[in-house]
Amino acid sequence: MSKNSVTITDNRNGNQVELDILDPTIGSSAIDIRKLHTKLGLFTYDPGFQATASCKSDITFIDGDKGILLYRGYPIEQLAEHSNYLETSYLLMYGHLPSKEEYHDFIGIIKKHTMVHEGIKQFFNGFQHDAHPMAIMVGVVGALSAFYHDSLDITNARHREISAHRLLSKMPTIAAYSHRRAHGLPLPYPRNDLDFIENFMYMMFSVPSREYIVDPVAVRAMRLIFILHADHEQNASTSTVRLASSSGANPFACISAGIASLWGPAHGGANEAVIHMLEEIKHPDEIPKYIERAKDKNDDYRLMGFGHRIYKNYDPRAKIIREACNDLLDAMGSNSHPLFDTARQLEKIALEDEYFLERNLYPNVDFYSGIILKALGMPLNMFTVIFAMARTAGWISQWLEMMEDKEQRIGRPRQLYTGAKVRDYVDLSKR
Image (tube, rainbow, N blue to C red; front, side):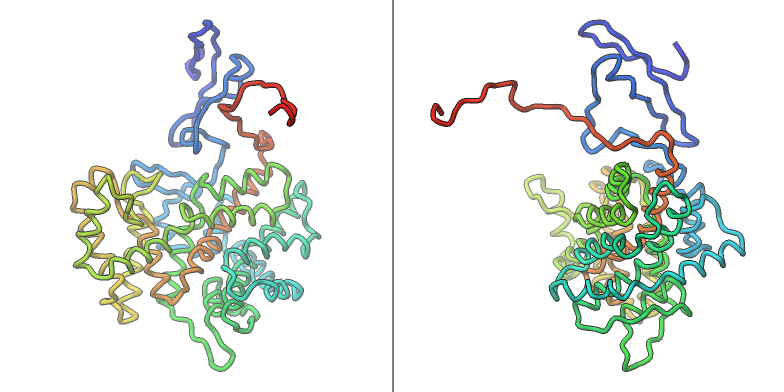
C-alpha cells in the first residue's frame, strides 16, 4: 500500500479499495474518492459539503483554527494595509501582483468598460419602483449576455478575459443604478477620473444640482470592505458560480447565479442582520438581557455577527475592519453613535464571557461592516449588493480558474435516497 493512500474496507463483504491522498501546498490533505463508487459501489454522505473538497484551487487559503486568510499566498492583513481593490482583483484573477505597467493597463481597461449599454438602462424602468436591489442585480447581470454576446465563447481565453473585465467594471454602475431606480434619481454616467471606489460612491450619492465631494475616510473604509470580501474560498455563492459554470453557461449567467445565492440571509445578508439586531437592542444597558436570551437553550434568539462556520478563532477580517470602523466614526464626529456604542459594548462583553469564549463566538467581519455601511448612509437593502460587488473579483477568478481546469466535470452531486421502494401503479378507480 502506498504511503500516500488510505484503504477503505467494506465490512459487509470484505471488499477493499485503495484511495490516493492528495497533499495541498498548505492546509489539510484530501482523500481522492473518485474510485469509491466504481470499486465498492458506495457514495459519501456529506450534507453541506463540510468535509468535501469539490475542486483544486490556487486562489484563496483559509485556516479557520488559526484565523488565517491568504489571497494567492498574501496575508489579508498586508493587502488591506498596502493594496487597493483593483490591484487585489488583478492578483486574484492573474495569480500575481501586477507590475506598474500591468497595473496601469488594467486600471485603464476597467475604466474603459464602466459604462453600460444604453439599452440596459431600460431594464431598470421595468422593475417595480420598490424592487429589492438584489432582485434587480440578478436580472440585469444575467441579461448582460444579451448585450455583450461578442465575447461569450468560453473556450476562447481572450473572450473569457473580456467578459471578466466587463463584469468587474460594470458591477458598480449596475449596483448604483439599482439603488437610484428605487429613489427616483437620475442615472449618472460613471466618472473615469475617479478611482473604482470613489466612482461607486459618486454614482450612489451624487445629484445634478450640486457638486459631490468624495470623503477620503469613507473611501478608505469602503475600500477595506471590498478587499476583505473579494474572495473567501468555496463558500455557497462561489460554489454556485462554479456549479453553474460546469454546465458551460456563459459568465454573466454564472455570476448572476452567484448573486442569487449570496442574497440568502445565511450568506450575504449577515451584516444587514447585525444592524437589525443592534436596533432591536437599542441601548448598551439592554445588552445583558439579550445575551441571556442567546444563552437560553429554550429561546431560539441568537446574536448576529458572532462566530463563523470556518473561523474557529477571531475572524482576521474583523480585526482589520474594526479599526477602520473606529476611524470612520471618529472622522465623522460619530464616536458616540448609539449603534456603534452598543456594538462596542456587546463585543467587549462577549469577549469576556466564558459562554462565548468556550464556543469561539468571536465577532466576525459582518459585525463591523454593517456599522460602516450604516454610518456611510447606505440603505440596508444595499448591504448585500455591496457584498456582491466586492465578491465579483473572487467569482470571476474562480470561474477563470475552473475554465482552465482539465479535471472539471459538470457538477452532479449524488444522494442518499430515503424515499419509497419500487411499487406498482394503481388505477384511480381502484384507489
